Image (cartoon, rainbow, N blue to C red; front, side):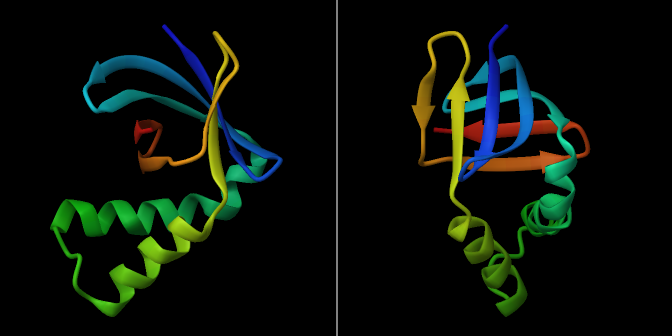
Length: 99
């Protein structure tokens, strides 16, 4: 079981505990820091668009652009590997990511 740390620039947002792998997706549990609260609504909004397959509205496009504009990075704690091109989906305390 790998532990990953999620950052926006230098601010730690969460720990991700990897529980499964479904290439190319990593699957796990999100353990947010208080800093994640600032972004939770953004990820929840994006998840609603994913679940309803609504990708062509102005609101959905704005949401995904806002996420893309974050300076997200993941650090895999086992080897301190750093990954900057991150795709992240959050639903409650479940998280899926691609690097």
